[in-house]
Length: 230
Image (cartoon, rainbow, N blue to C red; front, side, top):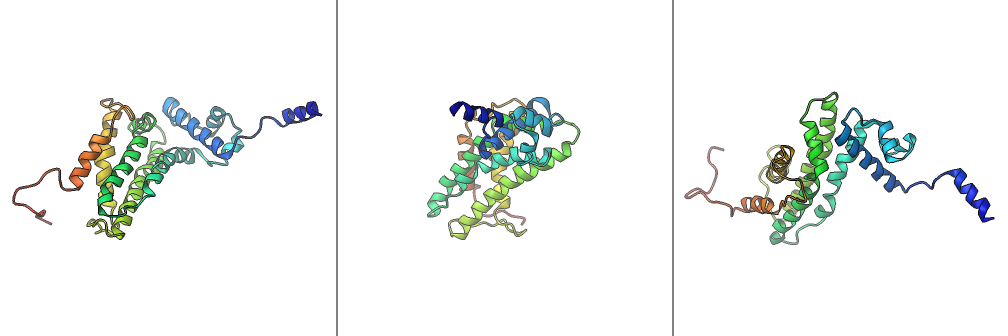
């Protein structure tokens, strides 16, 4: 009886991987191919083969190459969500929580694979515009929007005041400036080989400096309390 069951199991092939495990395998395969063989080589066939799955199974997670790349980049920004789920109980908790959020963001988007994709986007290759649009939409724009949403929630609780809403998007300008200080410049230096990617590079001192600037303790201009010329 056991022998018959074993034969039946072999006839059906290996048990299917859980959906999340299969999806992660597809993301890892797409990431490896992008960084090691380039965008042109990151085809649905190649990703399926590298992930050890049937091509039809891969289509459950992405309809084409652009959606595969979106899965890769969106996975990085998904990693921010747990830190952003917490709201400050009072004004004194805003900066410590913001530090945790920025640390979570730096820990994911300044890794070797993220730097590698950014470096790839700095080169010329066919369909670069398509890949850049996917990266912008699922990475930079989504990360900024998530941080802006967190800032808006703290403002709605009365814990901080946002004054950059001239375009009706309170928090977006502040979020963009914070990410430019904490993420964009280190990413540029890493792409040039001037800094080692995270976790070898410690983002904490740069985050602390950005928050001191935000909190008004980084510097002061003698005799000036407001910006002129607005």
